Length: 253
Image (cartoon, rainbow, N blue to C red):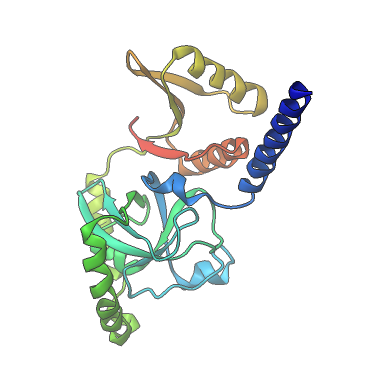
């Protein structure tokens, strides 16, 4: 009798846990992103993207704000341009805007201008700022003030004309060859990394996965390198079907 009771309780707990797991798949579990960071390409907003349905929402191009799919609304992020180490703090104002998963965010042209981002290669490092940070309380108080200043500025006052002319010409002279890889994941054991390689080859048409040994206990699975952004994006779109957590694009990996 006691055995049957214990078995019944075990089955109830097991089924409840399964239901919880199934339910979690339907929503974003923000707790997983408390230490979120991602390196990859960003999408610099312009009106034509909206007209071409490449993005579902408009954004105030004069403000220090972004769209992001995985970080909750009203969070703050630090965005850095690795090419020059310029950084800026921006606020996530929407996490339900639709745009290609190839991009880790949508930023305004003001942010692009502030960071001197190369529009032909808009590569950024994005890090979530913890809500426990003392910076957040200070930034939250001043953000509305900054927003009011941006709203009063004429749209033409914040443009990316310089990026499209002198800045891009300057960047192109200094630019290294385009060479990026897709980071799938890091593993403690080499066997685990090799199993991931097999899965990629068996479940996709991608034939260029590789393992890079970073240390005795760290093995990185990569796709690439790619010297063309179109091939990079095509491979990214295919590998994302395997539903990896946080794919990243690494330069010269």
